[in-house]
Every structure is written in C-alpha cells, then in structure tokens.
Amino acid sequence: MGKVTYQTPDGPQQVNVSLKRQFVIKNGQIQTMFDTTETIGDQMLLEVLGEKSDTQMKTIVTTIQREQNQIIRDTKADLLFVQGAAGSGKTSAVLQRVAYLLYRYRGNLTSSQVIMFSPNQLFSDYISNVLPELGEQNMVQFTYYQYVTRRLPHIDVQNLFSQFEQQLTPVQKKIARVKGSLDFFNAAKTYATSLERSGLRFRDIRFRGEVFFSRKRIREIFYSYNENYHMGNRLNATKERLIKMLNRKIESETKAQWVQEAVQNLSDETIRSMQQDGPKEFKNSDDEYRFFARQLVMKGFDEIQQDIVRNRFINIRGQYVSFLREVPAIYDLAAEGISEDEWQAEVDHFIDVFKQRQLPMADATPYLHLYDLITGRHGEREMRYVFVDEIQDYTPYQLAYLKDSFPRAKFTLLGDLNQAIFTKDDSRTLINETSKLFDPEKTRVVQLTQSYRSTKQVTDFTKAILTSGQKIVAFNRQGPLPKLVVRPDEAGLMTALEAQLKVNNEAKQTTAVIAKTLEDAEAIYEQMKAAGIKVTLIKSENQRLAAGVIVVPSFLAKGLEFDAVVLWQVNAANYHEEDERELLYTVASRAMHQLTMLASPDVTPLLDKVPADLYERGG
Image 1: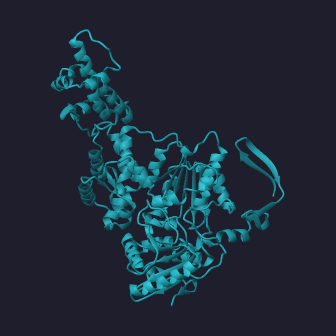
Image 2: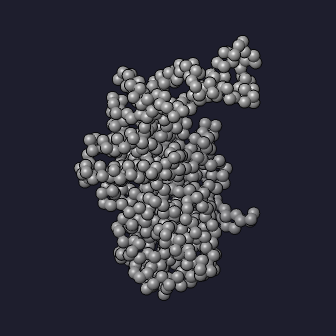
Image 3: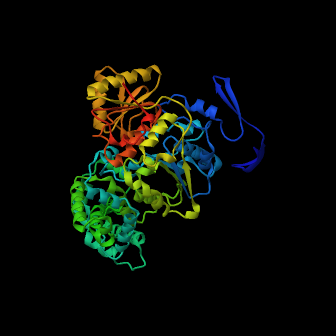
C-alpha cells in the first residue's frame, strides 16, 4: 500500500495504491470478493488451486505471489537462477516473465528474440496456450534434443527414451560425467586452438567422381597463413582462395569431354531457357559453344562452391574422434578415476556406434561445439533472452554451449535439483558450475520453497521421500492422504487400479497412470484396454495430452500435473537405487489432489524412512 512505481513502455509511472480488491467472476457474475493488503489472499488462492487440471497449462495472472513477482519483473540480472520445489509455480512465473518483458520492451523486443528450452515436446504443447492468453505471441520453443538434431540432419542422435532406458557400466557413467563437465568444455577449446598449428583433418572435394581439390592441397592452403590467423579467419581465407581457384578453372573446364557432350545434347527448350539472360544471337559457332559451355560448367561448379561455403571439406567426424583420442593428454582423467586404457576402449566403442551414424547424447554437444570452434561460428546474436526449464537434467557442458550459442542473451534458468531424471547425482554441482559462466555481480538466485500444486498431504509425503526435502513448504490445502496398495501379484494390482479409477472418474478427476519405463507403460496400457477401460497411452513426446485416463512413462511426466496420479509398480525391482529417489519424488509430485501407489510383490525401500502417518495402506 502507499506510493508505488511501475515500469511501462513510456517510462516509470508513480501511483498511490490505497486498496487491493480481488474478485472471482464466473459467467459475468461476481462469485466472491476479497480485500487484501499485500498479496493474494489464501482463501482465493485455495479456490483457484482447488480447480481441476486440464490438458493445457492455465495462466497464473490471478495467483501471482510475492516471490514469483521477483522472477517476473527482474530486468537487471544476466543470469536469473530459479530453484523451485515441484509445484512452486516456477514455470508459470517464467511464462509470465516472458509476457512482462515483451510488454516492458515493446518496440525493441519481439517474441522471435526470446527462446525457451522445454524438457520435452509434450510439455511444450502443454504450455503453448499461456502466452496467447496473456495477449502475447509465443516465443521460439525447442527441446534441447530438437536444437541439437536440427544441425545434425543425417545423424541419429540418442533420444529421451534411449537416454532413460540405457544401462551404463560404472566406467561409462564416469566417462559420461566427464563429457558433461565444464572442464571438458574447456578441453575442447584447448584442442581447437592447437589445430591452428597442425592436425586439422580435411576431405577431398570431388566433382563428377574425380578429386577436384585434394585434401593435401587444402591442408597446404590452410596452414600457409601466418600465426596471426586464428581458426575462423584461417578458414575464411582458405575458402576465399578455393573459390578464386574454382573460378579460374571455369574456362579450362569448358573444353572437357563431358561439357562438349552436354552442349551437343541440349534440347531446344533448355537452349531457350539458358538464353533468356544471354545474347539472342552469336557471331559464330565458337561463341555459341563458349556461352553454353560456360553456363553448364558454372551450374556444375555450384555443387563445388556449396561444398566450400558449407565447410564440407572439413572432416568433422574424423576430427571429433581425433579429439577423443587426444583427451588423455589434455584432461586429467586419473582425477576422475578413469585409466587411459578405459578411455580409449570407450572411444573404440564410440567409433563402432558412430559408423552406424548414431551419436550418443553425451557426445552430441561436444561434437557440435568442436565444429563451431573450428568454423568460427559466433552463435545467434539476435537472441536477447534465453529460458531453460528443468535445468537439473542439463550438463554444465550443455549450458556452457547454450551460453556460447546465444552470446548477447540474458539467461533465466529454472529447475528443481530434487527432480533430476537424466543427470541424477551430478545435478547438485550444477549451480556452482553454471555460476562460473556468468558475472557474479549480475547473477541472481531466487528460491521458491512453497509448493502450490499439490494438497498439503501429497506435498508432505513427497518431500519425505527426499533426504533434503525439509526446505519444501506445503501450502495449506487439505485433501486425502496418499494411498499405498500392495498385492502379491499384478492381477491383484489391476483390481485395485480399476477400483481407484472408478473413484477418480466419479470425482471427475483426470488420472495419469505413471509407469517407470515405456515397456511397463505399454504393458499396463494393454491390460487396461483388455479390462474395458477407456485409456490413452502417451509413449512419444510428439503426442498431445488427452482428457480422461492416460498412461505415461516417467521420463515424459516431467513438468506436467494431473488431478490424480497412480504410480504403477512402486516396488523394489523398479525403485531400489539411491539415485532413483529423485525420480520417485518427481513422478509422485505430479499429483494435485490424489496420489495412489500400487506395488507387487513388495514395496520400494526408498519409502522406508517416510513416516507412516503421512500415507495410508489401502485395503
């Protein structure tokens, strides 16, 4: 209350606020009214949060809290780091932030200069209506996988499903951790700098099946420039030289046998088409031949010119393998508990996979980064704001690469370090590693500990799954205790599932049955269909959420919320490793009103330390 200043496109405006009054209006009728002094009243917030979920995220303009407002209106930080508990409204607040920035800088900022990285396409679709409802166009949206694969069109990059399902050996886990580190990012830069002196690998430029510019000749040109030429300048100078050499070869190529035959075989229609931009008549047959021969050669040389312009004479695949072979000389592998033999054996395995045009996700970013370092690519400089959701599933290398890819942008990173699905135990070091990329004076960290999504009973239960869950504060919205049902076999679980779905349907709740793996999800989906249950299986991130009952694997549930959640087979076989604790927390915290856990023949030991009064054993 009192004097308040707020920013508009016309500059700061000062007003005197004497009262905050909030209304709930439905179908043109005022339902309720509250006078509040600071933020939205608990009573109104309870009403909004108690509503049913939908297949699309709703706007939160009616329920913004003070701590979310800090995120929305920050304009000074180069890095805004939002650590938020599950259901704390971090994604909603950030979408509101995008709308605020587009409003605040209208005329100087467009939605095409704002990019958001979502955890999967399913989630991108889920949030796609929020900005249009706030009166703004949607920003550019990618998943990190989409961003990487669009630049690798002929390579099969490991997808979300494969990442989640893969079983790595202890050594492979260590190596993946190295490849995701900031030190490995710096090792790639060190290696690329060394290529200014020697070691860059080239491939022949071929024309009509013959070598036109040999790799040996290209190498000689590339290394003929003095040491003042760095990678990007050296490469550009090499390309200019090759194009000049190409242009000088046009005249001599017109005398080649293939050109003579092509000129003789030109159809009348082709001749008329080629003559449109040329002379209508020729002095003699030699002039006529020279004109058409030159046109044919120049058209044929277009392919060579494209090879030069697009850097196809660089053997980036061979170069990346060379980099991996060199790593033991420029990276302290012993400090990570990896021997040189173990590293080289894994390089051999990588080569076998890469020969089949498959690229593990752990290698995709270093591969692209090395290419950018060699070619002097400067990133997308027009992008002004970058938003990365669920950063706990990114590696420090990936975040450093995004920082390089958008050199002029301000970053907003948001996530919950308790919800790491792909990086697991590495997520804890993420804040420290990422902070090295930005000026500490222009970095701001905002903690959101209040969880609004779930009832108090669901939040208290899910935070008890974690070893560090004490920082999460439940909002005081009451509901039933989470329920755990254990049966000796799956047949008994199916009976319990059918009974729970009947209860949920009568309450008009959307229900997500979340299985750990895609294989498990497909199996329970078939059982439910056979039992006559109307159900939708979500098995790809390219699908859209459907109303009613859905079955979804755990790795696609990220960021979503449902009225009721049924966790399928929360047993020791599925959830037994300590690093699966965060996964269990993530899937359980998708529930807004009702959480049911089904297990046979036993229960995961990860629930052993959860107090018995936080859930009930179902009959």
